[in-house]
Image (cartoon, rainbow, N blue to C red; front, top):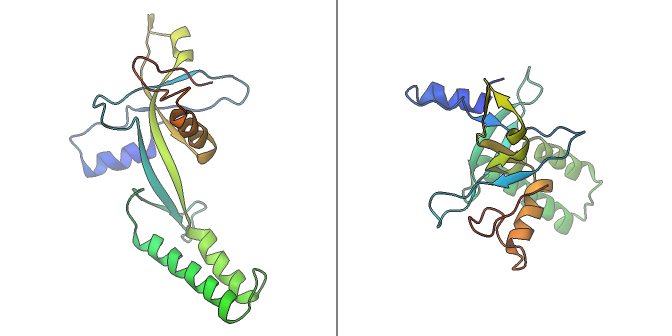
Length: 176
């Protein structure tokens, strides 16, 4: 199955080919061993971070994605910030609680559009070393899109001097 994000990028840049990027998917009944691929430029980080908002739309189960860099704020970020400001005002000035109807209404609005941090890593899946394609062993990079339950521990290990960056060319290590 082709990557929807890549297909969208190709619509806007018809001379570029993106949809041949392979996505890594976890198999729940299988242990995976992955290696983060370092950037060509050692000054750059081995991942791409972004925030994704899923904006509710009629006739859509998931909504429409709005994506932007982590270090940027969009109109939705500003809107959610304003809603949190209003919640704090209601709690301080009007003695509302989390269960007050006015606060609950605002929480419902925030829940529908709050942003989530995601990180994309280029990885090698060690499982690929065991498979052949057209009679040849092929190891191709994959894009690994991670939720916070995955990227937070990776970043913690990378900050620890005992472990260091898992994508380091000389001292890197596999993740399981």
